Every structure is written in structure tokens, then in C-alpha cells.
Image 1: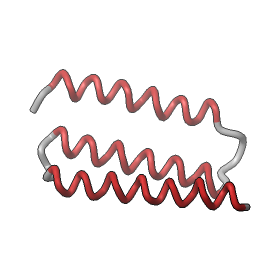
Image 2: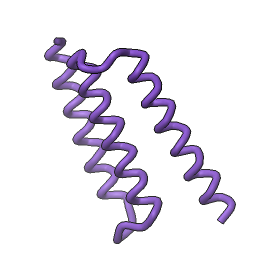
Image 3: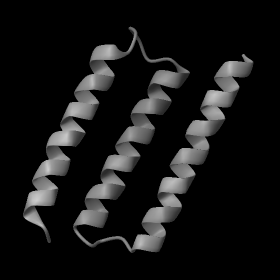
Length: 80
């Protein structure tokens, strides 16, 4: 376990979550909630990967699923 990487990732994750809450509009709509949940899933998965609780192939699959879901949100928002 690389302690420095874990500390750095914790700081980056907290800054990311604070940035999301500062820049988002009021309330929790469909897209705000989705961005928050996708970010939380990515942070949790990356923490597990840093602690060697998740294999790299499973981590890659989860990241691709998150990217695919986010792409669907973007294309749905453009079409709406």
C-alpha cells in the first residue's frame, strides 16, 4: 500500500467533491445526482484499487461502465 498515493488521492477526491457542490446549481436534478453518484463510484473504486482490493481488470471494467453511463447522460442532455 502506497501511503503517499492514498493521501494525495484523498486530497484530490475531497477537492473534486467540494468543486462539484460549489459549481452545481441548486437542488438535485437528474444530472446533478448522476454526476455526484458517478464521481462517488469512481472515488470508491479508485480507493479500493489503491488498497489492492480490486483487480486491475475489474477496475477497468468499472471505469468503462462509468464513462459509458456519463456519455449516455451527455448525449441525452444534448438531445433533450
